[in-house]
Image 1: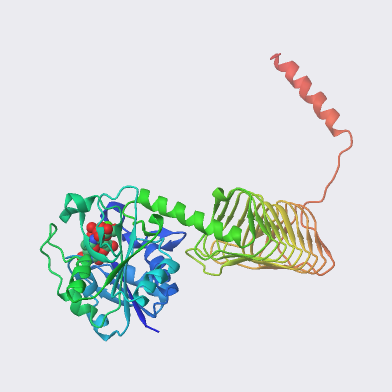
Image 2: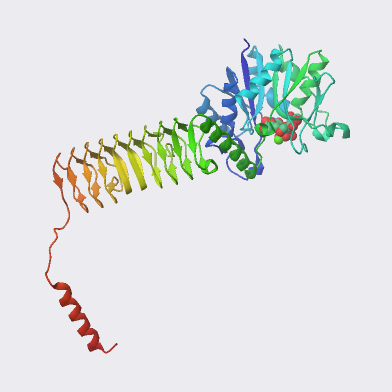
Length: 460
Ligand code: UD1
Ligand code: CA
């Protein structure tokens, strides 16, 4: 078994993104592109990872480290080419015994499975293996020049290619794997006598062949190696990523009536026999257990700028249409959350219901409790958040305000239209509104008076 070090190149500023955020931090499926690449490398068996960034790009290192834990970061002070970029990690390379995999930080759709196939070429005896693809339009890419026996002879950058070489359809994705004793030594022999005066990593193929080593090309789907340079390409990558994830979920037992309208995040978890109706958005940090039904037009977000609590919809629950669940929502087994209901940092016990027009924020709701239409958990006084607790089987009448901190005991009722500011004892009725009174015959007297006034004023 060979250890593998993955080196991800991310020194490019990505100016075509027109953004203050470094290119590789733009998200696909809610996760920075560079983190997707690092995850694919891990999935392919990389035991360690290194990242090459440009000067002033510490933010990229922080995000990558947050996602990956141990990861060493190297700064390429000047961008003198892809071979030069790999050599920014020279110290790491010299300490490493085993395979080396080089990836770009802006190709978020690369998969662990494809990288494993690339490694198989090393197992088959190649010292250098290059991932290629056949794009509809090869303009701008390096071309893979292969021999009659299918082995890889050279990679020619378009600017340096002859007419015959430009007609080659197999292009360089940029992903390269090495199995040789001294990768740093080999890369150190690459020169920059080319159209761009850069140290091309691609020249590693010819240098290796001079040493009598064999190089191989492995082909993959064009979509997997698409690079993102601008925001329109980012949207294309997002679309392809979403499509692949939806398909995975459907094949794993999730029904989507209109899959094109369901948006997922990198960490979305969905159980089996879940049905998802049209137009549902999953932000990060969402778990959906088995047999849940999500009706149309819902928005779920388990992690945001303020909270990383996540949210969970438990077995057999029903949510939507038009429901919004935020960080810390925990929707119990067989519970129901209906239209225009927002839940944040609140746990609902099994079978609890909030079917229409409610805000349930900072709460603990017992099993089987019923939250009537228009109920508001008044959780915020402008300074701090406070908690509302409902006991098992509590019943909140419609259009009630529960001013936190407050507890409604088990089995208690709250009368419709109440503004509850004090605790309600278990089993009691809490009522907090003006008492109803009646004036018999008042309407008839009122109409007579008004008609008389109107006639007196002479206006019709
Ligand atoms: C490169 C390949 C080309 C391939 C294409 C695929 C070389 C010489 N050419 O061309 O064969 O078809 O990618 O998209 O490798 N980078 C650094 N430091 C540098 C230079 C580049 O970190 O000094 C990083 C960039 O941020 C980028 C990647 O390496 O992520 C590729 O560099 P780029 O200049 O875009 O190479 P291409 O000309 O696209
Ligand atoms: Ca490029």
